[in-house]
Length: 637
Image (cartoon, rainbow, N blue to C red; front, side, top):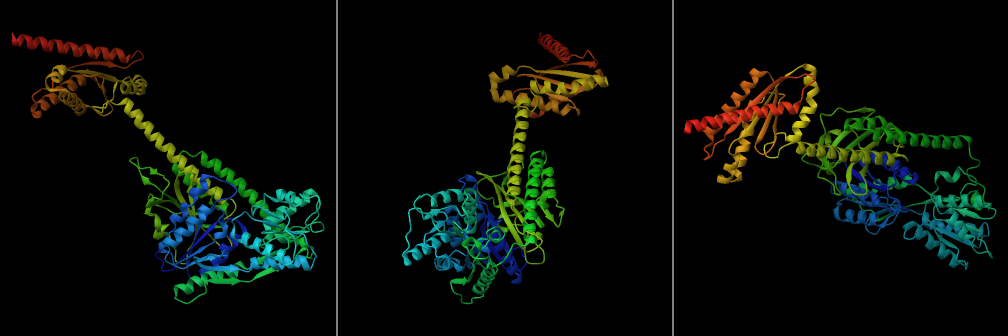
C-alpha cells in the first residue's frame, strides 16, 4: 500500500482518545517504526451506555479498511463495547484478511493473541486482602455482563471465595459499566444489608474503583478504614489521588513489541505460539490499607494534571468556537479554511487529510449514502501547518485511503476516522501526529463530528438551492420553446425597468402572433402545431440581440423586448420575416409557418408603462394582420 515499499499493519480500536488506547497506540507506533512498517489506526467511537443509530453506522470503518491488502492486523477487542460491532469486525477479518491477525489483550480462538497475566493476578489481590489484611467479606464490582476481561476476573473471584469457604452474599456481586457512572448505585447495593457490610470491594477496573471511592467519600465512608477498594489496569489516576488505589498493571509497551514482532515472524514463516503472555505487576497502595509504594504525590505530578485539565477545558472552548464558525459558512472554501485554521486545536498534528465519499449527481454534487462509494475525493491536504496546493479535488480509489502522492519517504502512521451520522457516510479524515507520544485527544471526535455534520448540511443546502433554481427557472420558462413564459417576462421587466428609465434607453417591443395555428392543429395534428410554435421561437431567437428578452405570452402569441430605436424595430421585424421565409423554404412540410408581427418603440422615462407598451405592440401586430388579410382577399378577388 501507499507505494512506499513497506508492509502495512492495520489496528482496530474504539475510543482512541482514552488512556489505555492512547498508550497502546504510542507503543505500537514506536515498534512499527523500528520494524520500518506503515501503521494505520482504524478508529471508532461507540459507547455501550448510549444506544443510538450513530454507533451502528460507525462500523462502516471496517468496510473502509483494505483488509485484503494489509500485511498484519491488530485488534483491541476489549475496547469495543457493543456486540454488533465486535461481531462484524471479527467476521470481516476472518473473511477478508489474508495476513496474520493478533488480538491484543483479549484472547480469541480465531487469531494469534498477545495478552497479559492481569486476570490471573486477581487471585493475588484477593489473597492479599485475605492474608495481609484479614478481610473475609469481600465483594466484587464487575463490568457489564458479557465483557471478556470482566467475566474472567469474576470467575477467578468466585473460585477464590469458594476455595476459602467464604460466602458470596446476595449483595456481593454488582454489575457496573466499566466506567464512572455506577459508583453511587454500586455503593448502595453493597451497603444494602443492614446486618453486614463488606470489608473490601475488588473492582474489575480502576475507573469503577475510583467511582466507588468517590461515592464512599460523599457517603462519609472512609477508604480503607471502613471499606477497602482495589482496581485493575494501573491507570495514571490511581497514584495521583488520595488514597492511592491498589491495582494490577500490565506492560503495554512489551505487549506492543510482542504484537509487532509476532506479525513479522508469521510473515517470515517463523513458527510462533498462538498465545503470547506478558507478566503483570502488582501495586499495593493505600486503598487496601497498605502504604503506597510511590510515596507522597509530588507537587510536579499534581501540577501536570492541573495543566492537563486546563488544556482540556481550553480545547473544549476552542471546539465550541470551531463549531459556531463552521455553522456560519456559506461557501465550501470557507469550510475548508476554517477546518485548516482549527486543526492545531487537536494537538501536535503534522498531517491532516479530509476525504469525501459519494458519487456525483447531475449537478456535480456528492450523493452520500449508507454504503461506501468506490471513489473518494481528497478535498483538503494540510501538512506542517500549511494547506497544500491542489488543482481542484483529487479523486482516488476509496480502498487506497489516500492518493499515493501524499505518502512521504518514511514509514507512515495515520489515524483514520469516519464522518457519518445515523443515516449516511460523508467521508473520513486521516491524521498524523508529530511525535510518537501524541495521539488522538478527547475533543477529536467532536472535531470530526462537526466536520461531518457541516459538510452534510452544506451539500444538502446546496442541492436544495440548485433544485429551487431549477424550479424557479421552470416556473419562468415555457416548456415547449425554452423561452420565458409570461411570468418569466414579468420577472425580466422587473429586473430591467429601473435601469432603462435611469439610462433613458430607447426600447422596442415586438409582438408576434401565429396565423392559422388552429387550422394546422385540426388538419395535421397537435404535433404539427408544436412544430410551428417551435419554428416561430427559433426564428425569433435568430434575430435576438444580446440583452433582449423573448417571451411566449400564450398559445400562439410571442413578445420581444430589446433596446433599440424605431429604425432598429423596423430592421428587427424585417429580419424576423426573412427567417420565417427561410424556414418555409427548407421545412419540406405540408403546412407553412404564417405569422403577423408589429412593433412599438419608446424612450424610457419616469412614466414608462410596460403593459401599455405591450398593448401598443399588439395593436401594431393586429394592424399588420388585418392589412395582410385584406391584401390576400383583394388578390383572390
